[in-house]
Length: 579
Image (tube, rainbow, N blue to C red; front, side, top):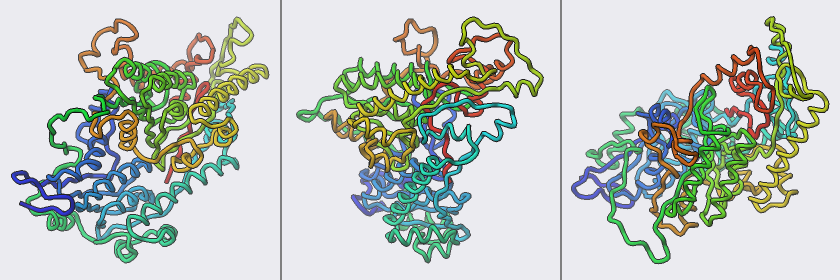
């Protein structure tokens, strides 16, 4: 029998387990109610079970160590959440070893290297490099391309930091846009430098010097203290086995399961129950959640049905609202907000766990929670709104299309893509955006216990990292989903091992057939159709008849969604390319 270091030895009669992980790409994270996503994720490491193993397997006496392949491009927030898990495992005293072929994936390996620094030993292939080159934010401006196409954006935003409008209407950074991006990139670099310094035992100033003078060859990286040893995979595994025992059995970490324990009676003062998880992942839309050409959308009907299920389930003692969304429809966001408030007011603790992004509409639905937890690199805030339309008159003329019009009502074509706003219509658009902004900031002030003046100081469309959002009062604690679940259990006075379950489970057979009413789980369980909707929207550009309204102009909407552009009033954060 092999021995392990740290908190114990492998149990007699059981093979010791050496957990391994491939962290060179993001683990799969299919939504519980999306069978298509679960099918596509088969064969890939699963994020949920992986994080559970990192946080819990260190206390399993069968487990003797952890070895992981690292490198490649990882989202910043995900790398931080995985790093916290590795640190939790390492606290057991058992060996943790990371190895990489190279940290030089186009110069964007800093998150992966910061993750590696949590392991007690880091190996690098002799021909590899360590390219810690800092953080860059790249923004693609679309105005020049739209001008060439003959598309005129008529958009209004609230306010100067709501740079989704700038990205479309301008061709360069405004001072406010630059200020926001400089702080975002600065916050990310500060966090990474601090993590690397703590993990490698280097002063922060030295880490920053290494960032500013990279990249480095393998030998240079070893001499600088960035890696411990040089070698290939076989040498890494041989070294690990020499530490934990030759007879250790390899097991992918997400395949690890804790030993079953006999059920124990509830402790005095603690009630039986579970933590319900409600997912808000993707762009926020009205109706059921669905999949489209631009990716999955989370529907207000689906999320509110999940929240109502919590209210109907006495054993659901707390809720973790997992938000990973750049926002979307203002109306749909407000619909979800209402039921989050209802769950909170029922006495059940509501804890938000923010993923890579929980901004604009994503922050709108999060702000009424009892506790908001974000990762340091989460992109959040963006408390603002924008809306308007794209005018395609020149584009249609260039391709030889003409328009015949019959309209009843002075503003029947207000949102038509085939003409500009009149002055009076633009005034009504401004009034609508002002009302949405007023509602949004009021919700934040109420939910966060802040004055309107304090909210205005951090709003105006500005995007914050989770670390900075905590400083300005938009976030309560820094951490990942595991931390949010812990807080929910504590607030609900549940045991440390209380179950964590989806708010609703609708099996494949239950999805068959027509729902009986709006409370039937089948009414909101379907993930929806695919790219056909976007193609139909594009076809609408040449439709012979249409009714223009706030949600009409189907062709414009299809074109906008296809290009990742807004159509109508949106609480949405623009994409940010971090390198």
